[in-house]
Length: 99
Ligand code: FES
Image (cartoon, rainbow, N blue to C red; front, side, top):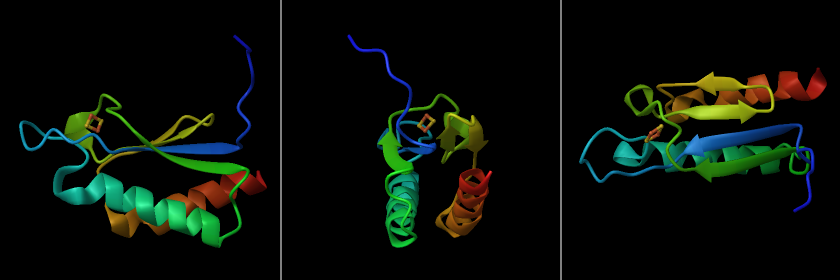
């Protein structure tokens, strides 16, 4: 095993867990994957690939508050996210990159 520090300034995790309606999950209605696609496209369009990574995750544990997005290592969480919130999340990432 090699112990490393993260190669990313910001790593966005977007829950894409889908329980197929058995109980609430972040992929209900396609929300989580849609948010991930927007964030991934925008990170590439803004030239942030390299310092910023966007990954779809499994369940983050706050399912009732979803869809959930978290940013590490800063430890920021966004809940009840919709695709319309992507610009606000990207504005937070921009602040982190400048900070
Ligand atoms: S299903 Fe997304 S946090 Fe659990």
